[in-house]
Length: 97
Length: 309
Image (cartoon, rainbow over all chains, first blue to last red; front, top):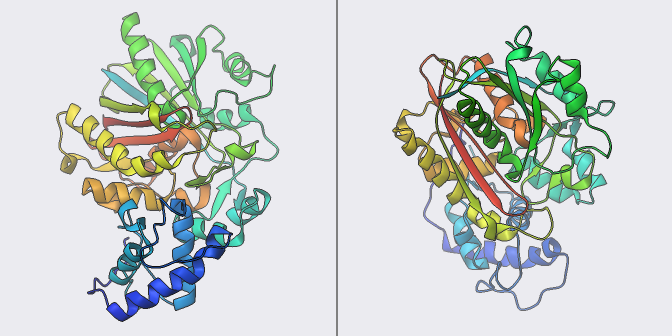
């Protein structure tokens, strides 16, 4: 019933690409202009992001980068910052097969 | 010991894609896609021509054991997520009781635990019957609400609601679906001013529901690995993935069959999922299983009830 997913070591190049992409996508998800975004930007505290908005961010990321992420283990702790979400994404890619 | 004599359920035939509901509720196509992709919700059930009585009547039609035993029914409880479910002065519960020969029974609504009020109703019914001391007396628990306002159609962070109903006959004693334990965690501090789920409720949901299930199982003198099945509230799939991970319980033993095509049916989900489990042959004699539900309105309510089939 559960999807097969490949647990892989986080690829630093991919992680950086994910951070960059998340920063690009955040204004559309939040429906407002946001400046100075970086890996250290706090999603919940500073941007007031909800868990559903975080899922929308992931969905847009999946479509932009043409990858698929397992959200089964996604917890509040992964939504702390752009960087922690990127770490989660890089470590929880679904097997393309 | 409280036991269920029989369980009935009803889902209207009409299914509406969530995108149709989302557009009317002001969600963007991308927000709707989140529900389809991650929450695994695709459609909700609706009965556009029917009222609340029609939903409850559907569950009663599926309930064995009521006909011929009407005079044994002492209480009729309507489990509700919302305090007001019909416009004043309509009283479909009274009308149904008269229609089904239950006019003599004491009837009342049970709420305040949001979507966990169905389990509270079973517990309340069992306690009332035990206090009466008549082993032949029965209580009828009904659950089901119409999705006729915006807040009854969508919980923004978790689920689209669908229409449906459940019913069960409760007695003290008996050897069918015995209640072994009940646990509820009421978290007033998680309430919000509006009847939507606040961020605190969201962050506490997984841990609180998992711990409540564990508490009920412990109270029943069992371990989680002795539980064969969880009959959940069908809120969405991702929430149960997280609860299962916290419990170290296999997701494929949670009956999530109705999430995709029916939506979250208020207090009735666990009755609907009971019938699904029976149909699929998942409930064997002696099987221990858990009904679990959670919800928020004036606070968070997390509830779990352990049964032996």
